[in-house]
Amino acid sequence: MKKSLDLILLAIFFLELGSFFLPSILHEILGVGFLILAAIHHRKNPRARFVEILLGICTISLAISGFALMNLIDLGNFNWRSIHLGSSIAALILIFIHCMTKARRYFHGKIFYAAGVFGFILAAGGIFGLPYLDRWFHEVRVDRSEIVAGSKIDFGKNVATIYFSRVGNTDFPPDVDAVSGASIMRDGNDLIGNSEMLAMMIHDAVGGEIFEIRTLEKYPADYSATTQIAQEEFRTKKIPQLEPIELGNCDLIFIVYPLWWNSLPMPVESFLSQQNLEGKMIVPIVTHGGGGIGNSIEDLKRVTQAKIMNSLDVYSSDIPSSREVISDFLTRIRSEI
Image (cartoon, rainbow, N blue to C red; front, side, top):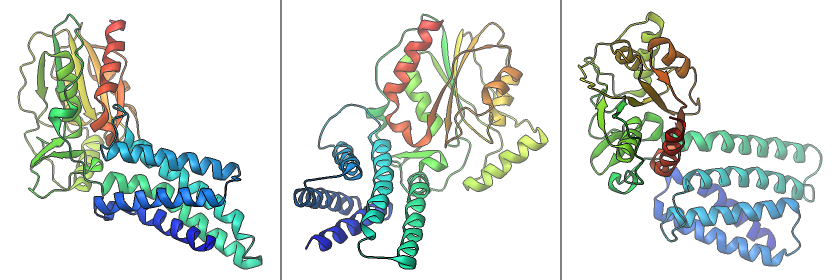
């Protein structure tokens, strides 16, 4: 009975890791089933070792974050999706260690080492594969009316928010996949760019004007093709032609852009090179898939005479839950001005 319970728990766990390809309701049902069986398993094994204790903590974290994501409990504006994903990866590592410890009872010699290699490959695939699946197979659906509104921060200055996003600079087909890795999300039938969403949050917080950097020549809908064109723009130092922006009189500029090839997108550089921003302040907000701010701040300083303030970088998958992070960052910036 105990071995059967272990195998069932293991099977459900790996099914849950493939949740990106399962209906949400099935993922939730399997998750609840896993928690019930894990509790039964604990009752049958009350004397837990260190690894089992850590695995129990990960299971509790998975449960809490899962219930928060299902809106069954309200625990504030934490980034529960990242907590859920991180707990899954930690649990996968601990399950590998746990299984290898127990495997010595049943396997010996070459069979044991073969099982260890197989388990290691499986665990490594999950550790690196889960973030990839989350970025490229989890469709990001939001309600902007719920995630954009938040606390207001008065800077006492003329402020402007400027952003560059794939949405608005690409003619997307109606059925395009709205995933964080492609820098787009969906509100009903409307596509919203990652940078655009952050710009909305900032504009809601600080007020003032909001502007979008638009290129005259559109980028392709295919993400890989866009990255190739962006790389060619960097290589040749091609400055894209932009639709005109009347910036007006502003003292403080929040500029939001994605990290492209570890730097500023060339359309952003094109915009900055056309503006006389001497004596003004720029606050950079960078969206990225793991590269942070890259070299973009150094490039900002190279192409503009404005004073560059402290920056904020936001991981693409974290954007829908970033309104409170934005407010905290803006409050810190206000205290530095």
